[in-house]
Length: 279
Ligand SMILES: [Zn+2]
Ligand SMILES: [Zn+2]
Ligand SMILES: [Zn+2]
Image (cartoon, rainbow, N blue to C red; front, side, top):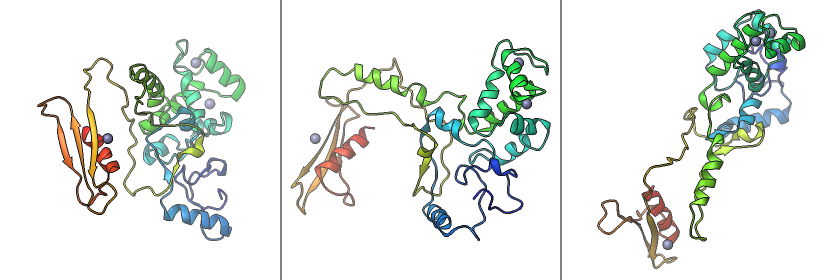
């Protein structure tokens, strides 16, 4: 498929065209094998794309850097405009995926690294010896600039929910006194490999590509909220459901809600609307 593209297709090098859904390039549909054509058409028809609330670093790293689907096209093409550095990145460092560029960018973080072509730090030395790179500092700087271009949600060098969400859940579990209580699972990160990022039936609106702030406020006040749903004549045609939120006697935050006509009248919807109202 990567070979079957228009002459003007970018990225120009076939080995950089890794996945038509993770990158912006498209194959030429005419002349594609029927099975491939069918699969692509179904994917397009039902809006298959990569999306999710948060991803593990392993997933961010596994996506192609060149032509990255969510990277701003102009900034990226300026940074990847043919030059000695860009050729070195591709041919000597074999940098294709976000993770490859991240490894290069990490060299700059080492305290012994100096901003010069003949820096003698361990990272630069390794790139000179193993990759025959003439100027590791320039290559690593370019790699870092590219990573910085990625939307925050896709930048593995930033802090993400993956870094704290499981500890947050453990803290919640420890607060539980009553054995019957189940803490709400607030983990939002998609784990696994790059095959886990595809979503189908997505809406046409743009995805939010920032980082979802999922940190729990550690020392804030706590509020105990009771919710309940109820339904008279549950299961019958004349069922009428309601929802309640209780904080304290005479609290301004207490709520009672009659489930609107358009929503199924049942005890279940009552319970759900109660939780939603409390949130
Ligand atoms: Zn160095
Ligand atoms: Zn280089
Ligand atoms: Zn109930």
